[in-house]
Length: 130
Image (tube, rainbow, N blue to C red; front, top):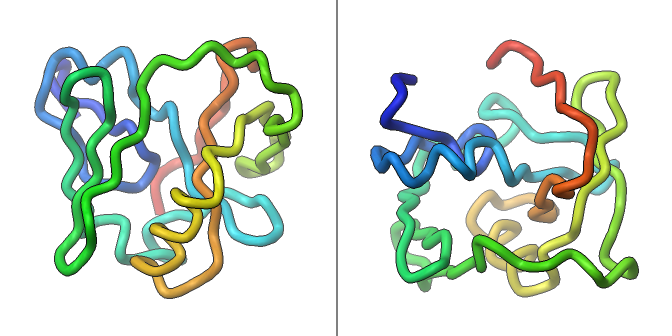
């Protein structure tokens, strides 16, 4: 990826928008074991169309209703905090809720949840892409 693109959701298509840099790899999808899904495990990730609009990450996919995810939310609800597994690293994250989980589960055809990397999380050591 060059400096004018970013990948807000790990494994999804990049967004060609300079504003997206601030959100590069901010979200990830995890399976029931809370391990990060890659494009090999969830090939539908590459079919997503992402854009930024009016403070939201807009997610579109063929045959699905649009999903809008707020970009900047103050993380003060500890009940939605969880841990994601990225490679061997446990990463502090925030669950984006049941609506997002249902949307991505429907699109990918497997149970999954959308998590956002917590703003206070340690730097994530992302594995090389699959």
